[in-house]
Image (cartoon, rainbow, N blue to C red; front, side, top):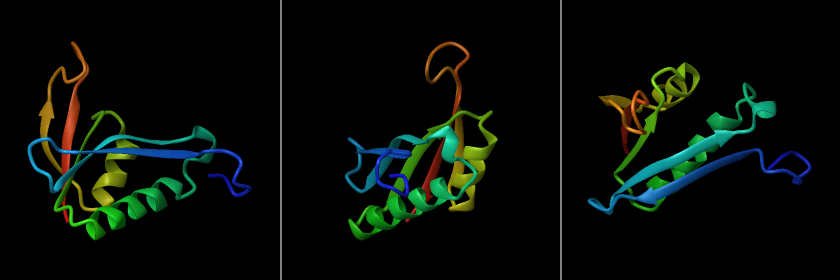
Length: 103
């Protein structure tokens, strides 16, 4: 939420893997454009990682647009590793990097 608690400025949606109950998948991670480059994404991702560690998750996976350098760098700063480029993940020409963090 914003400083005055009136607006939602960031969202992180998670799902548990169907194949492995100890793996969480970040389905979406978004910070409002007005609030980017202020450390909010870093703070939110750090909190999400802490919560998942405390809930005994062993891995976090996500996909990211290979052209989204800012997001890729954020995830890499937290220790996420690129695993594979998934070609046409969201339709023809819409590729995604699969990234994974071992907790």
